[in-house]
Length: 515
Ligand code: ZN
Image 1 (tube, rainbow, N blue to C red):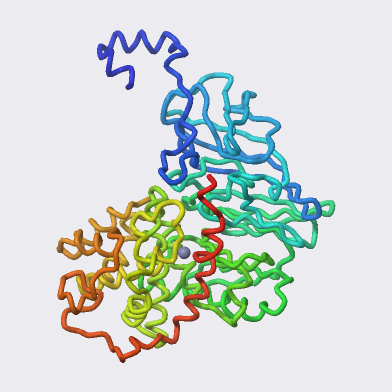
Image 2: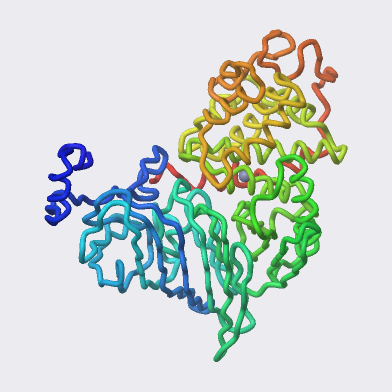
């Protein structure tokens, strides 16, 4: 409790200000943000506003070294506090003074400032560090992708600790200046706008700026040999896409997909409202993994996403996340549906407008092809648990929930909700319950039963038309266009499924169970 509450008189307050507070008034910041899925993610006691990273990376050795300057405000009296980092630290300064530091666990950097920190004060932290990200193991794995010509940081739910010290949780967003020097002929790709680039003594430095609040896991770095395309959108935003020169057979399909970024973003603006950031693009490094990630302003795409030809659907998914996931982020990781349910539903909407199957047809297909015994129905998209955070049910059943909502509240209110939400919670965080309340407010209808049915109950909901209940996967009285074999497979189905790689294999193999 705050001291003034105990000693309310003005005189006592004055005396207290004159007397230095005793050491007991300063306590260590918590080593985690209190996330039930990832207890050690993030830290307590302060709030970061800006990260300034000045880095050097040598592809030949995978050596990353640099200095991070972190601007924050304390939220309590602090005797010490933590940052999340897996690399080796050589010096820490807090408000200009040398601080002592140590490590605990695999990713906790514990910093004890020379002078304890008072609540509600600005604080600057400078961390000098170095190491080989591919050798850093946290929870038994590395989030860093080593490539033949460099490396890439792009992982969810955590990747920051492999390349910079941070308060690694989506609840603490900040702006970023990321400056990276790499050998001439190599590029460093990151978030936001490329402000400048300069060459000296065989090294080229790239200066990137992401000037809207950004969650730490959405910060990205890709070093390698890239071909870069740049453009400006009709509304004046800079577009920058980057393609590894080492994409082999997938190069054409990758470009044919990611070069449509501006077009897809413009279409999404029609659905979700104004694009929330000041730059856009995408990059395709020469990694061997199979997934994509909504890194802010500049999504990451694995070449394998394009192994069967162009895949605009995955571009739709990652760009939809710029509104649903990046601007409006999860509060805690159990809220993952506010990201993935909507990104998947956007793919359905794109299919609908392309004439490759309506969202209703895609919903019918999911419903028909997942029998009641399928474990798919035991995963609750509204709180899937850390081991199933990226289970296909979070995506497909999560999108079914939105189709049910659409049928329940009608086109006008449904699209008003989709468009209003990114403004209501812009640049912030939101819980599943916040969305339920928001949809109830916009539509003026009680929706607890509908969301309970589609997001929480561990069973396959009854076929709505037959059951005649108001949790309808289709409007009352409308039957699915079914033949004996069930509804036909929409043309977009396989393409959308190509974005599932991570959910079925890697996300599970990543083994949250080991943490
Ligand atoms: Zn997604």
